[in-house]
Length: 62
Image (cartoon, rainbow, N blue to C red; front, side):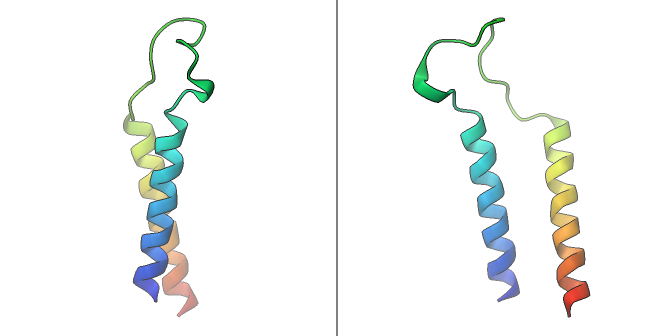
């Protein structure tokens, strides 16, 4: 059960990040130039912190 919970949270986090990279409506580049920005170090650190927090809460719940 615990593995399924962690897998579900990881899936939804990945899905939300991947959908955030898509421009809505498919209309040209945003004003100010440039295309979509790839994932950087800050996003990876935030995701890692979220995973550690979920792990902490699941252990505390036991």
